[in-house]
Length: 178
Image (spheres, rainbow, N blue to C red):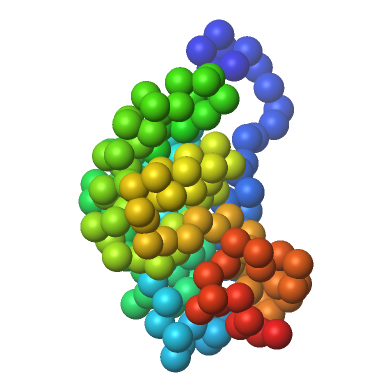
């Protein structure tokens, strides 16, 4: 719509921006107390479409604000590089479903190495393609991390994560809050 100067009366807002807004406004009540003693470390995968292609770091900055609020700032380890300079995971743009598995996995090696360097036990991937790709390259290259969706950690920080929603958490978090 911007490209073709089409007038519109709506604003595109991601769920990440809404989570950040709701936390700041006190409408989404979360805290990092559950991780105070555990000290489980987290990092983030900045998806290309909201990281590099959005033309702003607002969304990925909001993502960091939300995650730090959920797990404790001291338990967040950022990737280097990050935000709009972050490395692509290799799973987007149809690559995950395209059938060129060897090429996708080889391309993802750069992302795997970046994540491994953080030493984080968990990678938050707000994009489903990134989530699947990061799990795949983690298994392939011997990754020592779990990939989780942001909403899972939000629910954990609210104390409402159900037993059936913990299947892909590691043993360090599988029973937290039960």
